[in-house]
Image (cartoon, rainbow, N blue to C red):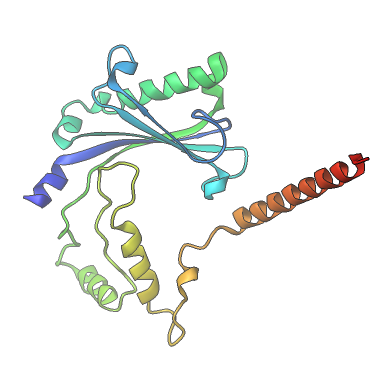
Length: 218
């Protein structure tokens, strides 16, 4: 029954790349658009997550926006032409609020897809020569099968991180030298450099303020 419940839930997703923020400012921003926020109302609420260079997702000056709406798998199959209508509506509203008439111009790229987890036991066909090759790769862990991410909750990591960590540490490429814990999901180099540069600038500004305050004393 649990597997059936997972398969009955799907998630409509849209990924948008812009050159200006649509939700808040820099950093990670999240908002929830309730059904009655638009006219006509949305079928279900839409979650909007905005990230930028600080999360290592895109170059500085650009923003990556994720829009998602949970639905029943059967609903998404009824009218394929209107599957992403609510997401398009929310995106148009956000673009209008952030940039007015020029809103569409700041949208550089967008794509939509339906996220519907497959059966946990779904594998390749056991017939054909490729089946033996894939099975051998899986036995040697050069190929690892993972469960599909859950459709809901839309923006939270479930078992994916623990599975990725297990794959990383058990990969057959290290030999006798096992990786250390801090090597998993290392911070992108450009983010670390930006943070270091920003910290130095803040320190220099603080020192200047202290020097100015000292010179101002009678």
